[in-house]
Each structure stands twice: as C-alpha cells, then as structure tokens.
Length: 215
Image (cartoon, rainbow, N blue to C red; front, top):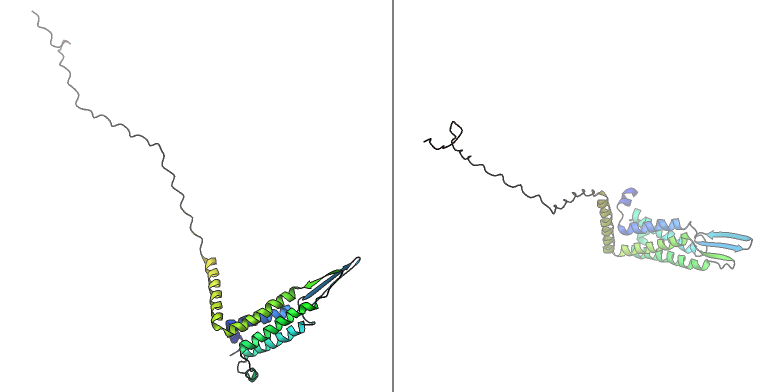
C-alpha cells in the first residue's frame, strides 16, 4: 500500500497521535521562555526555544515517538518494529510521558530577573498540549472502543453542522387575519308588498256620483 493510501486509512488513534507529534514539532520553534529586563535607561528582552536545557529531553522523546509512529503507519512489517518488546500503546504513552516531563522540568530553566520579568511563552504551552495529545493517542490505541466513540462523536458533529448550514430558511408566515368589527351593519328593512289597488267609485258623466233623482 502506498503512503497516500495508508494516510487515508489511518485509525482514530493514529490520527490523534500524528497530529500531536506534528504540533510538538511546530511548538519546538516557538518561544518557550521569555525574559525582559528594564533597569532605568537600560532595557533588553530575549527568548529561548525548545533547544535548551530540559527541552532536549522533550525533543529526544518526540524523535523516538515520531520514528515509532512512522514505522507503525508506513512500515508495519518492519523488523525493527517487531523487535521492540513493547506494544504500540505503551511505546506511544511512554514517548508522550517523556515529552511531558521535559516540558514541565523546563520550568526550572526560567531565570529570576530582579529588574524585569520572565515566564513561559507560546511554544511551552503548545508543547504541553502536544505532549498530552501523544498520551491520549496511546490511550486510544489501547482502548479501540473509546476511539470508535470519539470518531462517531466527531462525525455526528460534522454532519450536524453540514445539515444545519444547508437547511433552507422557513417560508414567511401569512399575515394575521384582522379582527371582525364590533359593529355590524343592520339588515335593510323588507320592501312592502304591493297589493291590488282599490277601485274608485264610478263617476257619472256629469261629474257627480249617485245624485238624487229630480222630482
């Protein structure tokens, strides 16, 4: 299997360990210890990376852990790997613990500055996180069920974010119906029904009706 295909088929434990080892390498070049001096008109500042004092223990442990991880991923049938009397999870946790010891002991290298300040830098913090990450990778190597649960959790979170971003916006709701008026128009009165007109009495030709006869 070619290296690219092996990288695509990495287990969760291998991905965690590999990411932590990469972060550990990047952290080695950042500032681990920072010092600043301010004595009146004189002021100066400086910093140290991981290449000093107990930082060397960190680097040697990182080198051993990276070599083991590389053989485990890209050359699992190598004789050198088979000759190591430790299982993979113990070797990785051991490398991570040695890295962590180097990070913590490096705190003793912080000088005491009477006219200024000194402390840890970003590189020391990243180195601490990377060391813990290598230990976690070894733990996941020992407990595959925990690695499977972590992978399922990450997959569900990523799928939820993807589905949430692609959900269309809901359609606007219809405007509310205005309330009925309190006053309603009264119905129009019914039209009267017209009956037959009454007949008028007959009028004589002389213009009088029912005149008495002339005696």
